[in-house]
Structure formats: C-alpha cells, structure tokens
Length: 173
Image (tube, rainbow, N blue to C red; front, side):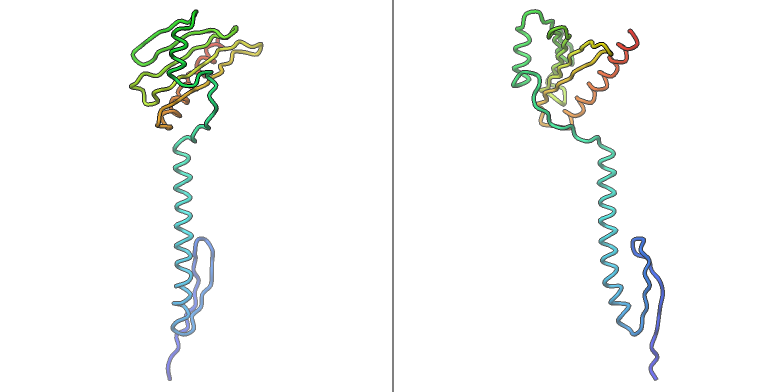
C-alpha cells in the first residue's frame, strides 16, 4: 500500500496569516508557487514605496515655480536697469552684487549672484515693509540656473536670512 503524505501548517505572507494543507504531492507546490511570487511582489512594492518616502523626507520638496514678480524679464535686464536707476546704491563684494532701492516707503534690497554661485544667474528681491503688526519681508526670486536644486537652496538660504532679520526687527536690534 502506498503511503500518502499529509502535511498541514501555517504560514505568513506580508503580515497575512494563511493555513495551508497538503494532500498529495503537487498541491502544496502549486500553492507555494502561486503565493511566493505574490508575496515577493508585495514586499518589493512595499520596499520601493518605503525608499521613495525616505528619499522624499531626506530632500526638501521642490519649490513651486512662481511667475516672475521681479518686474524684469531676465536677471541681466534687472541688473542693467537697476545699475542705471537714479537713487539706487550698489555694493559689489566677492560673492554678491547688491542694490538698495526704494519702492514707495518700502526698502528693497536686490541680491545678484556672481558667476561662481551654483544658482547663477539669479536675483533675489526683498522688500522690507513696516506694518502696524510688525515688519514683513516680501521676497521674489528669479533663478535662471539650470540646476533647480541650486535654485531651491538659494531660496531656502534667503528664507532663513529673512527670519533672522524679522527676529532682529522684533527684538529692536
């Protein structure tokens, strides 16, 4: 008389408990052949999603493209026009060209990158405005650099600088 192996047991696939039983030689192999690829696929998708989430968390989200609110078509056009504008004060350092201007009662500081800057050519326009409830800085950036990560880093560095200026204004420094 032939003996028939009967095996039963439990398994776990991706957190789901299942019961398997085997009666005969091919049914468990067929079941495992169907379940294992499915589990491997689920695990692979879960790992890929976890890596994507971790990557997104490690890198700040890209900044949304905003229409050009500097009032000039290009960075070069802004620099040329502001250099020639009466009443502006220009300062050139090793890293930046800055131009101080007035728009109404707002002090406007234009910061232009130099060729060595990763976000070149770029201009950051910051208008400091006094309001009854405090000081505000309206900032507009025009970044024409091909490296958008460098543009984002430029924006974030000026956002941090703006916060320091706001804090100093609140503290009366």
